[in-house]
Length: 217
Image (tube, rainbow, N blue to C red; front, side, top):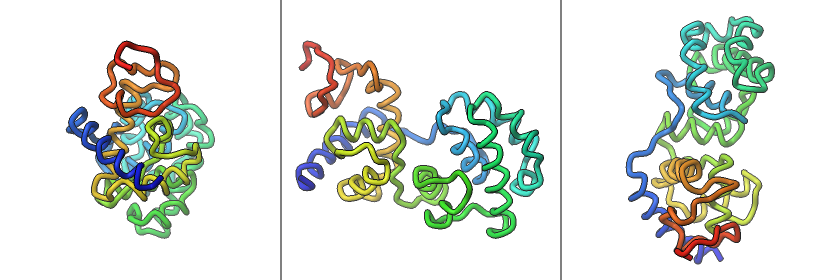
């Protein structure tokens, strides 16, 4: 099974790279901690909405120390449209308190350290070490999980298990871009409810039972 998945993944990597040659994180940031905060805001919220909210937020609190000293209620007001704003505001302030007091106002470069921060799971931690520090990163968000299952690269909806399965078949040097490309493909073509299979560059090798009936099949 692993050998079949590894063989399939090579072709999928190749085609997605041709389809999306220049990919990067959709979240807009200028400082390391801003990516960490934006990623926390993106939970159950679109990147587009996050990018609308963060300019005013980062202007009001321009540093880790400023966030660490922030009034949670003021952060809540600035991120209200992102949803779950009370929990997110609390996490943002508390993670910055830890960054300030424990990590000398620096964002850690290890997944094990990042996941000790409030509101930071493995998905966020992988994105941080990949985008900020150029490390191998398997960012298993909803798009990556959905497409990995549809393409036969994984067989579970559990993010941790999907990450483990992708680590076994996706070369480390391809990992972050591969995940970014799956996200782009999931948004543009392979949506959860209405996949546009006729426009998909992976149509002929996709194993999904969700494929729509088109003449291309």
